[in-house]
Amino acid sequence: MVPVASVGPVNGLLLPLLALVWWLPYRARVRTLAGEKRAVPGWRQACYASGLIVLAVALTPPVDNLADQLLAVHMAEHLLIGDVAALLIVLGLTGPLLAPLLRNRFVARLRVLTHPVVAVTVWAVNFYVWHLPVLYQAALRHDTIHALQHATFLAFGIAMWMALLGPLPKPRWFNNSARLVYIIVVRLLGTVLANAMIFSGTVWYPIYRAGDAHWHISAMGDQIAAAGVMMVEESVLTICLFGWLFMKVAREADERQRLLDYAAAHGVELDERRAARAVAAGRGEELFERLRAAEESRSPAPALLHDAR
Image 1 (spheres, rainbow, N blue to C red):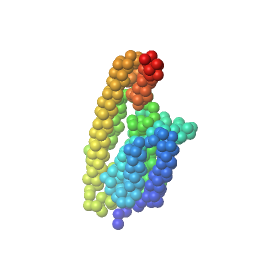
Image 2: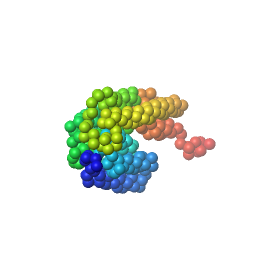
Image 3: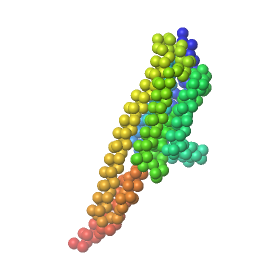
Image 4: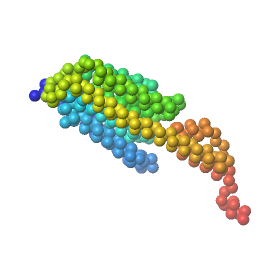
C-alpha cells in the first residue's frame, strides 16, 4: 500500500463536473450567436470541448491517482491543466462569446489579469509559489488545498494564454515582436524551474518517497523525470507557438499588402500605418469593405451608366 493521499471527492469529482457546467452555457451562447448570424467557427468549439475533456481526464483516475504517487505524473497533470487545457479553452473563445460575461462589473474588472505584463507576472508567481516544498506537499495532504492549487493553475493559465491569443483588445505596444518576447519569457520561466529540479542535487518533495519505492524509482530519478516532462512539453509548445507567430506575421503582411494594392489601384487614400493597425487588430476585412464602399461611392451608379447610353 502506498501511504500517499488518496483522491478525494473534491479533486476527483468536483472539477470535472465544473467542466461540464462550463460546457452547457458555452453551447447555449454558441446557439444564440448562430441565430444572430455570428456563428462561432467549428474549430473553436472543438478546441473548447477538447480543453474541458483534457481537464476532466487530468483530474480523474487513473491520472489523478498516479499523480499522488509519482512527481513525474503530477507534473504532467499540472501541465495538462495549466498549459494544455487552458490553451484550448482560450482558443475556443471569441469576443461575442464573452460579451455577456464582460457586462458583469466584477468580471469586467478581471480583464486586468489579461494584460500581458500582469498576466505573465501573476502566472509566474503562482507557478513558483505552488512549487515551494511546503505548499506542494500540503496540497497532497489536503484535498481542499489540492483543488485550490489546480484551480489557480487553470485560472492563471487561462489569463496567460488570453494575453497572447485571446479575443480581448491588446495594448498597442503588444505587437508581434512583443509577442515573441512574451513567448520566450513564459517558456524560460518554466525552464529555470526544470533545471533547478535537475541540478539541485536534493529531493524537493520527500512525500513521494513511498510512491517512488512502490514503483521502484528513486526519489531523485522521479524528480529529474518530472523536470524532463516539463522541458519536453514546453519545447513542443514553444515550437508550435513560434510556428503560429511566423504564420501570423506572414498572413498579416499579405493582408496589409492586399489592402494597400486595392487602395492604390482604385485611387482610395490609405496609408501603411492605418492598414497595419487594422490588420493587427483583426479588422483587415472590415477595412477592405470600407475601401470598397469608398471606391463605389465615387463611381457612377450602374443605372446612370445605362441611362447615359
